Image (tube, rainbow, N blue to C red; front, side, top):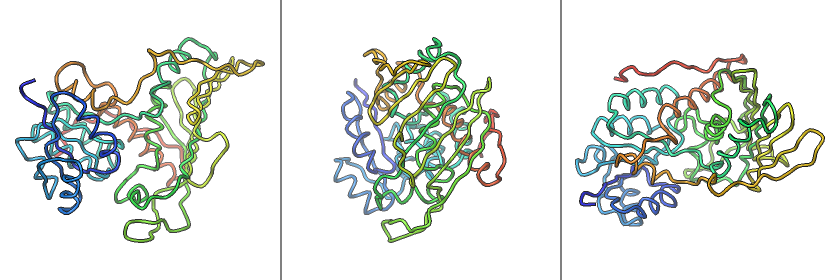
Length: 349
């Protein structure tokens, strides 16, 4: 490949350093050429640690650089929309870390911009925790292995040890409408069930300060969410995501059908079926069904015209952000809220 793909990084945090950088470097013809972090000092440190030759004091300088072909955005969600829009308008392809944006409205602006530049790849790092089982789950449900699916229950434990570097996850000014891993969980659920159309929700906030890099602070992101999701055909799902409870069957998704139950145990990495009146039977995941993290490979392949983006395009991102928006509204209003389903195609400027 005579013309390398030159990638600039905006926000070189833990996941970028541990996952994206080595994975991009493993792809022939890809070069990591520039980095911009939150401050000039942290940009210099990231460049030195990661061996990236060009360091910028500000992300706007990186996005404007003609020697950058594509931008990886690993910054906090509040920056995803402005960096994405500027990059696309500046002729660059964009891969943004999940969560798509701080708000659904930001996501709509990102999508509208991407549609104005269809020759540029716009992609979100997909939810990857269930990729190993997604194809098998979809097949089991489609084949009627548990009959008609009536209800789904998802339990997620977010009570892990606090990391001061993760303070942004608990600040609305940085994370917006994102709550813990709620958007990532729902993204996977939509792959199995289709798209939710209405929600009811209750949230609770922490009562004790959290540790941040600058000292203790009070989080204004909920640490406990109970949500009811409604889907077409009468299907419902409940989601309990919490940093204050540690249920025994946390990190699991249970599908209740007319003829049995399908259970995904994420902690154990197991999928099992329980027919009504029968014993649990493990389901072996075929090797061909076991997908894995390939975000960087998929992004580069899309840029090279080898295949389109499927996981995760901006349309999908806007939908999961719209569900988070509806959950936020429902928790605040105490009412059932519809998920906005309009087609965001207006010019964002």
